[in-house]
Image 1 (spheres, helix red, strand yellow):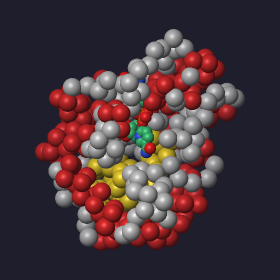
Image 2 (cartoon, rainbow, N blue to C red):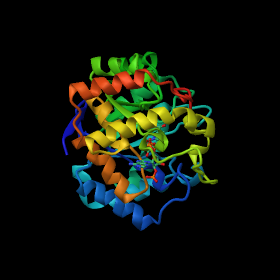
Image 3 (tube, helix red, strand yellow):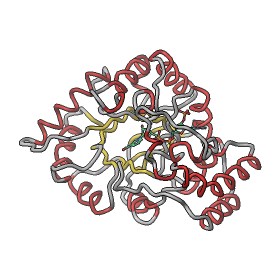
Image 4 (cartoon, helix red, strand yellow):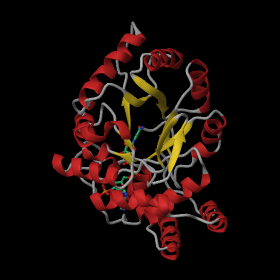
Length: 320
Ligand SMILES: NC(=O)c1ccc[n+]([C@@H]2O[C@H](COP(=O)([O-])OP(=O)(O)OC[C@H]3O[C@@H](n4cnc5c(N)ncnc54)[C@H](OP(=O)(O)O)[C@@H]3O)[C@@H](O)[C@H]2O)c1
């Protein structure tokens, strides 16, 4: 697969969000299935894998997902980029470096590795971002992480952080129906050589065209029960976007999910999406979006169609 740079870290053009093997989309697969799915993705050319310390069933416990990623990538560690995230929930942090280091050591242990390629702060917390940036700089100097990033942040925070320690990537929500980051965040990242990693790039499944107003989501640990675009009324409201995407997909002999990923790859050279799926076939389908080339004309037609359609539901940077 073609590659892109997140500052100085080279990754496949499409990465893989591993969260759903542990959390967020209902029943999790058998561990062996998840391990094989990750290994298949790697064999298919994916070199960028996204996890987090908090990805465990129902967000209870720590590290379920990191352990799966470790088992899957054990034999190929040097040829992959592993991104994980720390969640600082401590109400009071006396020593920021020690606290961040302690979280990192837990991740290193679970990931069975000596270094993390890309270490994100999962959500802003009580500690000023400058202090986090300083700690991350030290961990880079020590060789424990190769680069660092922030998640769900605006340009003001990114700017304050990068002045202390240059950022490798920002991971925010971004898709055809969550476009806030187009105004400032993505251009700012591009100007400062910061990669932009969209999470939920398929809008939690909406843009695959497989969700209808009658789709029943799961009862346990399924974010689709509260993703705003996926309430029954909003799925109905968003159908024109999905239909437009399906029409495009038919013409390009691609799937709607692939078109939604190819659109953002075409639009920005510093963007590397990390679609999530717990299904082996759909993981490969999403990775193959890197082969779907849009012409300038096709891209402009997509942009124009999108511009004319109202989005129902908005999650934005303030959401979970
Ligand atoms: N930084 C953060 O705060 C944050 C927040 C959320 C997620 N993330 C990261 O971003 C990754 C991706 O986000 P996400 O999983 O929330 O959203 P997503 O990639 O937009 O969508 C995932 C959902 O779409 C479905 N899907 C994916 N590809 C499909 C396809 N080709 N055809 C039909 N359905 C498809 C999946 O169902 P199936 O499983 O049935 O295929 C799943 O229900 C996560 O794995 C995680 O690593 C980060």
